[in-house]
Image (cartoon, rainbow, N blue to C red; front, side, top):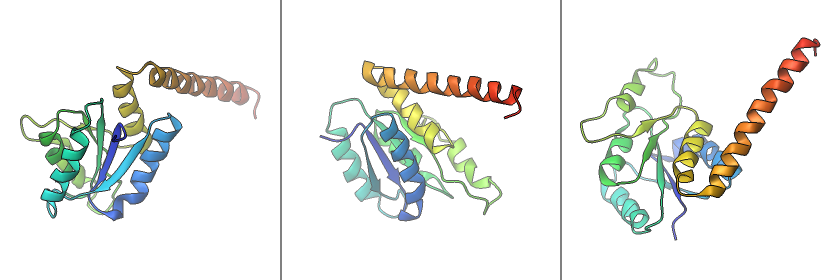
Length: 161
């Protein structure tokens, strides 16, 4: 059986970014797999990956990681019925203009865009939580911990710590 989240990177240059996503998913108790496939260079290989994932009837989410020209997210979204989250790696090389390929998609193609790896993992978890109460509980615990940290930090700031 396939893990519920498949992280697809356009090349191994995106591995560090993908490992951050996988770590955040692990922290939420969610299994993932990382695959490499390029919409530009290996579309047939990418279709094979997607067919294997789609053959598993359980709920799933795809997180795509591709820089520069993000054809990967649109290609994956057009091939699957499950949600796709685009999480492009940060790049200063093009002054942020490379994000435009993630922001604008053709009609009928609608991947979400989340820039932070931990945010992409949390969004995937929230989607899976729609049908999984244990994931929902882990998200609630994370949110409680985040709220408590703010309160603790506020108390420390009031006392000059």
